[in-house]
Length: 161
Image (cartoon, rainbow, N blue to C red):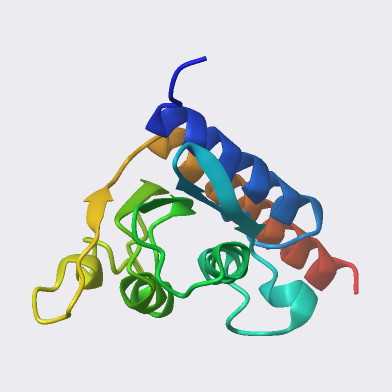
């Protein structure tokens, strides 16, 4: 059995995103890999836990740190279905994640190249390699459909309170 490709690992992140969707969370999933093994995986839990920091990336980073017994995630790759926000990008830099591979760009909050690129800011003591657009259409479609359905539910609730 050979090494998995970025697309194959992203499919694992998509499976995490589907877990979020199943519980009415924004479908974002993350997987952290080191030496061909998943060391952290998570999905968005912001609504479920009512915690602003319960983003998929942060939860996966926390799990990976606990599993490795260190805050330094050198030699790891983070796969995430949506471009990291500023909070998650900061945690990625501080955790020293080597590579970040994301699916869909985030035009409203993306800090891995869209609005800014905190992951490759040379004024920080660590930079991550960034690979964007892996299974972008599939990742983006999941989010588009989720928000379309959410708008439809809200519209129906206004019509039939």
